[in-house]
Image (tube, rainbow, N blue to C red; front, side):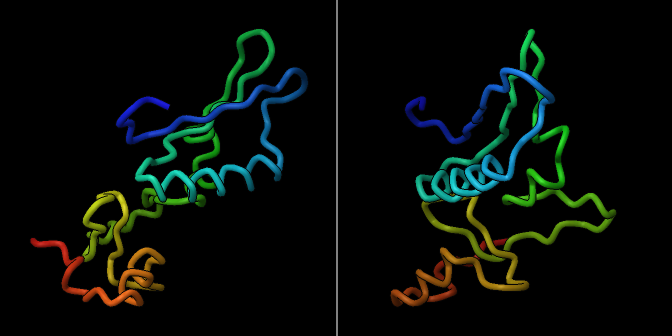
Length: 122
């Protein structure tokens, strides 16, 4: 990995057959996304490289499933909610204040931090 990289693109080879992704690969991608977030790197895309130069970008071709791994853009016409809380060291880790509290924030609060310490200034 490049020094000071803030994004990661993974890939795997399909030597024959269709350019598809197995359940094992989806599971592995979830683990890679979780691990990369720990070190402050976003999983940007996963490429499937096929025979004869063919390839598939999961970010583009299978957007709904790829984004189910993490930060999905809204595709249903509703606007995204701005984050109210942000991790001080890893800016891509945010929480809007709605729904279940983000794990990183819950862990920080359990360790004695205050919610105000993570508030996004408007």
